[in-house]
Image (cartoon, rainbow, N blue to C red; front, top):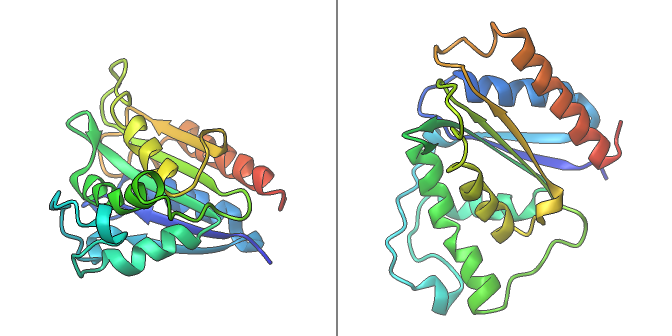
Length: 196
């Protein structure tokens, strides 16, 4: 069975730098994997209410598009999350999704009902930033690592593609070094899946 990738584009700006980097990764993996791309702005996902119900019930009580997406996150062999950096962190849409994944945390660390993946599950975090200042990604990476942890992805099975200096919408596509880095990341991902 070929590995399945769930690729989530979280940017509110369609076809910008983070989504273009994600699309490059998916194009490079080709037919060696199955892949589903989800555009978060096409879904309705409310913010976490902090009600704590998931710590008792093991599920989120809000009924929206998070429920089917949550199952896809758990079922995927590879989870890719792509976000632009906004105000030194992931964009609001990305954070809302990750906050709702608190239900996985509740299952894993409170209720102890979380089922770890049977095989090796991989995570790839893509972040793009307009600025080039030092430490621009320092607040994004820990947020992504939380998502990967509660989705059953071990730290040693996560990869990062962090691209700065991409401000205008088409900067990624017009930057050969950034495109090459994305292609190299796709090759590394395929090698980790042993499907090259």
